[in-house]
Amino acid sequence: MREPTTMNPSDQLPRVCQANADRFYQRVVITTLDQLPIHNVLAAGEAKTFEEFADNCAAHVDNYTANEAIKAFALTFDGMFERQLSRWATVYGVKAKTWDKLLKECAKIGSLDLRANDGMAGDLDEMHLVANVVRHGNGRSCHELRARVQSLWDNPSRDYYDLVPGPSPISDELRMQPNDLRRYACAVFRFWGNIDPLPHPALNPLY
Image 1: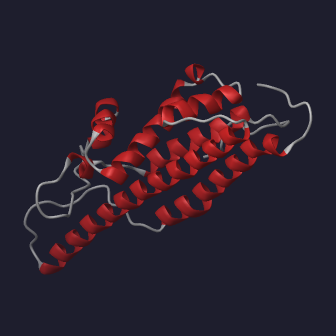
Image 2: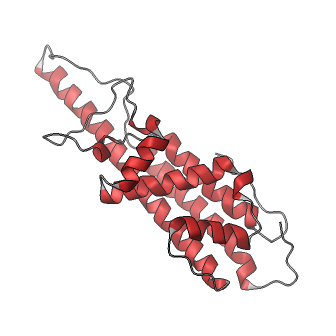
Image 3: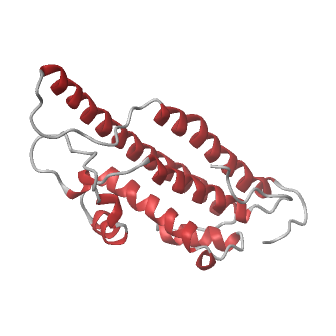
């Protein structure tokens, strides 16, 4: 990690970006998701009473809503991180036309070896692919994400169903959990912490 020679605004940018992303995750994402009911198991089959039927419908809606919220937060978090990267790159006069190039150039500026941080880099790439799928639906990113992270489409406990009538596109069957957002938030935190040139950087979050 490079050592700063003199204090200047650009040296503070990684720490400020890290703090902003961390606050958004803890104050907005966690707080919101904690208020959304999520059911581990969804009842299937014919209900014996109308009340049971209504409860089952409500549980399906709860899980569908939570999944949509998680996907929306992934899109927002990715957008925030990409804007942060662009701002960091601009300070150093670096221009990148693609996400991959932008991430690599910013890591290079901060003397961060992404190859030595496969877990972090992989989670950042996954977050960006998820955001593209949420934004655009089926397409190249959807096929790439499904090939790389099949688990995001696994539903062994049958706790999620697409409530929209008609055939479901592959992109709408994307099933995310709060822990996926936690991984993405950790990756963003670690990225900025590892390129922070100021003394005593925070390298890992507490969540």
